[in-house]
Amino acid sequence: MFKTLSVYGIAYFLLLMLVIGLLYFYPKLELHLLLNSHHTGIQDFFFKYYSMLAEWPLYILMLLPLFWKKYTMTIFFALSELSAGAILQILKFFISSPRPASAFEHYQNLTLPVVEGVNMYHSNSFPSGHASTFFVFCTCTAIILAYRYQQNAHQNDHKIKALINFFLLSLLVPTAALGAYSRIYLSQHFLSDVCVGSIIGFVTPWLIFYFGRNKILKLKMNETP
Image (cartoon, rainbow, N blue to C red; front, side, top):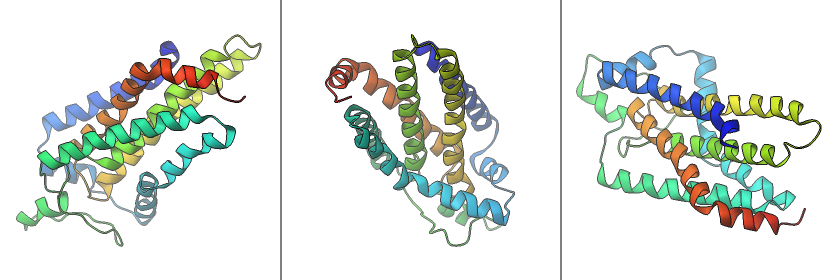
């Protein structure tokens, strides 16, 4: 299972190293402008609505396994999201960090790129809840895909399923990364905010699965096929 998941883990690790490098070499405000300097109408539309996926559509998708009586999948999603959300709220409570809209108010010579129709927030920037939600969803999905592939690896068509599984896993990090970047594009968060949000969203499902895997698997065996 963990060998199957390596494509997802390696992709995230490489992305994280790139992000940490950018955070190290560039000042916070300069980096935000660097990442958010080129706007087009199409991109404004895309990122405005793509970001909204973390507000409720992803939660609806987390409930879909219930239609196939895969209760433990939804439980896994829910526990991961609730745990990550609790960590986020604790950090937001103790770390009062201004959002880009507030930070740029002190620099009259700098213009903050914004998207028309987006309600700008001014406080509780660190860490990004949207970034965490995107990565919780994609990491949970990656773990479930890898587990189910392992369960069916003995079947005759396992090579075809291996290719499909690899393809799906390879899409998950870009999917989550786009969601995290949308918060920067919309000037709702800095890169450091989405970086820590992504780490919480990546690590929490692993911890939930590791410490609860025996219970999850036990429940799974009791599910109606």
